[in-house]
Amino acid sequence: MFRRREAVPFTFVAEADRFRSNVTPPPRERASTSQLVGRTLIGLTVAAGFAGALLLGMPSLDTAQSSGHSQQSEASQGR
Image 1 (cartoon, helix red, strand yellow):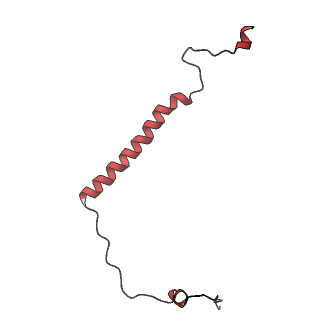
Image 2 (cartoon, one colour; image 1 turned 45 degrees about the vertical axis):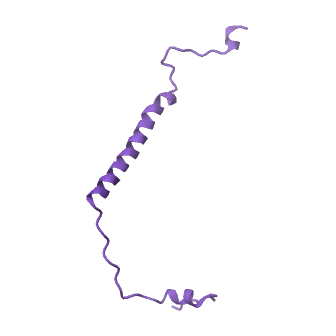
Image 3 (cartoon, rainbow, N blue to C red; image 1 turned 180 degrees about the vertical axis):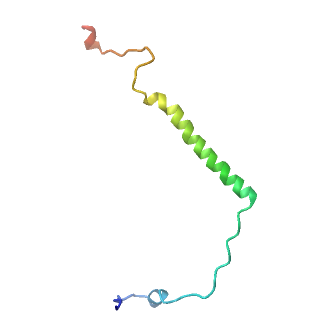
């Protein structure tokens, strides 16, 4: 139905939604080969960083005591 118009302090803001341009923007420029290679290398570097952090962090997250070191408190030693 009818859209309620709110008071706008600036006229150009109120008229901005009515303005439609008949000029089409120019087509986007295609990325060059070096840009594509650079983006790919950056993506691979980030992915390798995540994989390396995961591989290096997994042993510290392991809760099983498989290394033969046993931790005992002083209270369990009868002191």
